[in-house]
Structures are given as structure tokens and as C-alpha cells.
Image (tube, rainbow, N blue to C red; front, side, top):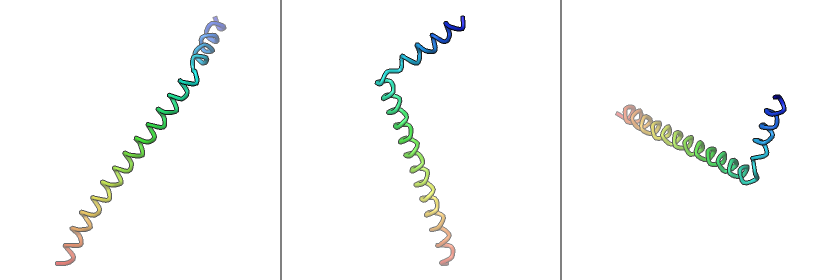
Length: 63
């Protein structure tokens, strides 16, 4: 019984081919790039918000 489950786990491990490994690496890289894009977009929105608020504060002080 124990040998069957160990053999099944071993078979699963052997199913990973170099092509599977490359596909997995590409998928991980793509996810990292998407995360970086999202972070950059959030930073851009934050800067835009600061510019708008800074402009409003600046206008208020100028009066």
C-alpha cells in the first residue's frame, strides 16, 4: 500500500519535462511583470493625486 503511493508520487515527479519547467518559468516571469505594471500604475495614480492636491493647496495659499 505504502509502495503504491510512493510510486505514484514518483511518477508525478517524472512527468515534469524540461518543456514543463520552461513553461512554468515563463508563467512565473509573466506574473512578476504584471505585478510590476500594477505597482507602477498605482504609483502613477498616487503622484497624480498628490499633484492635484498640491495644486489645490498651492492655489489656496496664493489667494
